[in-house]
Every structure is written in structure tokens, then in C-alpha cells.
Image (cartoon, rainbow, N blue to C red):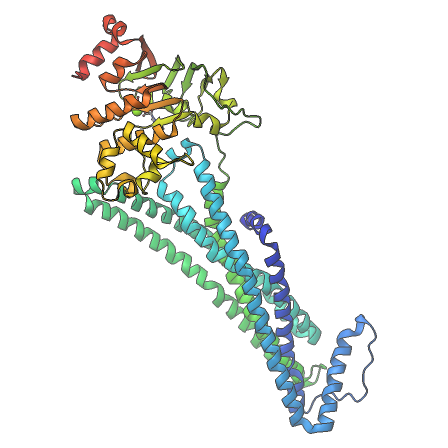
Length: 611
Ligand SMILES: Nc1ncnc2c1ncn2[C@@H]1O[C@H](COP(=O)(O)OP(=O)(O)OP(=O)(O)O)[C@@H](O)[C@H]1O
Ligand SMILES: [Mg+2]
């Protein structure tokens, strides 16, 4: 139940609604009791056992308030019966009863009405916070997570909280009032009979909680499987072309169906256990009712107690009234257990430590003036894995370009990811204008750096929205200018809606080269002083290749750039070339020097036989 406490924090902005809900619920309970109690004089009149009070009672203070109230009511009824006969008295009482029921239900509605603001507010806040957390978490977090599972947490797990915790709040607030006040009235009417109710409590408590704990376990299994299902769907849709090309539809479907079968089995257990809540409490309640009817009847008939028949009837009525809240409370308890599995999954993310955060006194850097230095950098992705970058040092001066070349897997992309702090170095330090990047705010560091990655990452939106990502207030002329520099203007204007054309999921309505040129135009619009370029290895046709190449050349002009290069032309023009192998720097120099050396670089160039 720790999650109840954690969720409680989210109630505070909506306290107002919570308080109103409690007030209306109190009124609801009050009128429920009134409306049942109205039966007492009715039966008193019918059975002719109604106590007659001919002297108007006098109020003696709060201590004897209930006696005063009963006496006053009886006095009023006696007067009515005396003056107009029992029929009239019955009619008045019946009308009063109906009015009580009207108020009871009015307050019940108002209570639920107020609570809707609180419930929906919590859901929105929780979902927003979860999304915010996910967006801001360090990049490394996502390597170990299934995308679909994160999606499941933000969608279905939050819905589960809505369906369980928040739907139960109502019951958790209202029913205890109802139970306590009804019990009080029952004790007042007949302490002997109420003993049976108390005998029942520990027995049912034990039964209910033993089923509940297995419900919680099953529910955790089900939610986990639900996350897995979503991640399978996500993977299958992303990989639809590969699935078709390898004709593995059957295998994929089998895997999916096995998971949904497992989910179904888990859900059957969850639903069945959840469904046991009401029947169990109702059955236990009925046991007590029949005991009470028997024993109470014995008391009334035997005349061994001063319990009057009408009181006995009302007592039974009250007991009925207590049964429903007891049932509801048990269901609420079960729902909370069911929902706590989802709450756990949500808080697991909310409480994940962000490994890459700003220091309290983080510097804001506005300009890039001198150089970027990497001093003895080492890095590994996981605690117990091997180093991927080993003791790498180099410097990029302002206005110069450095090319990283080397075999696949030699750590080039990794180094590129360390500079904008997508990951923190394991050892060594990276300095920008002499300041350690860990002392700089992430936002100011990253706004100095433009990144064009191996695969073009575009959003399902219009071309202009994709181009203006990260920049405010750009004119149409500037967008067109950037697109022209990136060799993208021509193909964009040939699209049916020009700059307003939607490019589909991940830009899949465009060709590879077009996507790359859009990413380049986007980087040009952002106009960062430092550029990190992870050249795509994918082969483009010569025409497209030339266009992209030109665009890159334009982009790099007047900028400091770190390029992971595969194209000879890019490499050749770089001011400095760093040759990497298995995380280490093998050679460093310009194109001519390295060629003359006839070392690793020479071999690479020969092997790749560029032109
Ligand atoms: N997120 C990750 N978690 C764990 N290991 C990783 C991760 N990303 C890369 N690696 C490992 O780090 C090593 C270096 O990878 P990196 O992507 O830096 O290579 P690269 O030089 O860019 O290769 P390529 O030329 O193929 O792009 C590889 O052995 C790879 O398996
Ligand atoms: Mg790479």
C-alpha cells in the first residue's frame, strides 16, 4: 500500500474537490441514516407500539441530544396522530421519507461530481509527469528498455490506475463513514446483536486478504505481459518490411499469439480473484444476518430484552445498509491491490535516477570561442562490459574539421555521443573552451552543437515543422534558404503540398537521400557553431550522393566539425583525420601524411576502394 501514499502526493492540487467530496459524502451518509430511520415511526404506528409523548421535551444540552431528538420526533408524531389520526401521520412521514431519499441521492451525485475533477486531474498530472520523465531521462536508459513497454506504462498502466485506485477513492472515502455511523446506530439500538458483526470482522478480514495477496501477484504478471504485447506490436509494425521480405509472418504471429494466450491466462486469474470480493463479503454478511434474525427474533419474542419490534426491523434495515458498503470496501481494496501492480510500474520509471543531470551551479555557455578537447577519454556502456573507448585524446580547434574513420564497431559513434553528453565518460574529461562539459548546463551545451546522425530522424509532420524543429521565429525565406543550401528546395517544391507536405511516419514517404538532405537543412536552420556528423553508410545513387555531398559541404562551411566519415571526399578535405581501431586511436594526421605512412589508413582507403 506504499503506492497509495505515493499517489496521495498527486491529490494536493485538488484538495478543494476532495474536501467538497468528503462534505457531500458526510451529508449523503447522514441522509441515508435518516431515510432508514423514518421507517421506525411508520412501523411503530402500524404495530401500535409507537411511544406516545404528550409533553414537549426540553433541550438539556448536547449530551442528551439524541434523546431530545427522538423525544421531539415522537412528540410531533403523537400530536399529529392525536389531531388528524394515524393515516395523516403516516402520510406526512412518507413524504418526509421521500424527501430524505431525494437529498441522499442529490448529495451522492454532488460527491461524485466533485471527485471527477480530482480523478481526471491526477491522471493528467501523472501522465504528463511520466512523459516528462521519459523525455528527459539519459539516453542509456532506453538501451535497456522496450519502447512498447514504456508506451504501455504511459497508456494502459495509467488507465489501470484510473480504473482501480481512483475509482476506489470514492468508496474509500464514503464507505467507512457509512459503516462507522451505521454501526454506531446499531450499537445504540442493540449492543447484544452488534456483537455478531464484530465476531465476523476478523474472519472475513483473513479470507479477503489471503485472496487479495495472490490477486496482486497475478496482476503484476498481467501488466508486464501487456507491456510486452505492446512492444511486440511496435516492433512488428516497425519491421513490417523485413517481416514480409523474410516471409516470417507465421512465426511472428505464433510468437504474438503465445503471448496473448499467456496474458489471457493471467487475466483470467486476476478477474476471477477480483470477482470473488463481492460474493465473499455478501455471503459472510448473510451468515450474520440470519444469525441476527434468529437471535434478535428470540430477544423480541421472548421479551428478554427491551428491543421493540420496530427497532428490530430498523436494525435489520441498517444491517442491510451496511452490507453494501462492506462489499464495496472489499472491492475497493481488491481494486487497489490490482492497481498497485501498475502503480509499481509507473513509479519505477518516475523514480529512475537521471544519470545525466546539470550541476546546481552549471554554467551557461553562449558562444564557442576556442576548441573542444578530449583528454584521455575512456568509456563503457555497462558496468561489467568491456571498454568501447580506450584512452582517446584529441583536439578540435574552432573552424577546423576532424574526421573519425575506422572499422565498424571501433567506437566512432560512441565518441560522437559523448560530446553532447548523451552519455557521460567513464574516465577522462571533455573540455569546451577549457570548461568541463559536466560543469555546463546540458541545454546550453547542446544548443551549440548540431547533429546529423547515421539515420535521419524525422517526425510524422509537415516538412516545414520538421525543418524548424528547435528554432523559434523563422521566416519562410529563411526556411527556403536553408533548404536551398541543403539541395532540398527543388524536390520539396515538386511535392504536392510543397513545404506543407506530410512526410509520413519517420519520413517514410521520402527517399533515403531526401531524408538526409532534410536533416541537413534542419541543422543549417539551427545554425550551430559546432557540427557533429555521423555520415550514413547507406549507398545512395551517384546523383543523390552528389547532392547530399554538396549539401554537407555547404553545412560544414565556417563551422567546427567532427565528422564520422565514409566518403573519401569528406575525409580528404578534413583538417585532421583520426583512425580508430577497437576503441583506440591508431593514427592521426592529414590525408597525405597518413597515406605516405602506408599504415592502417592506407589499408582502409585501399580496402574500401572509394573511387
Ligand atoms: N547502446 C549500446 N549499449 C552497449 N553497447 C553498445 C551500444 N552502442 C554501441 N555499443 C558497442 O560499442 C561499440 C562501438 O560502437 P559504435 O557505434 O561507437 O561503433 P562505430 O565505430 O560507430 O561503428 P559503425 O562504423 O558501424 O557505425 C560496438 O562494439 C557496439 O557493440
Ligand atoms: Mg557508427
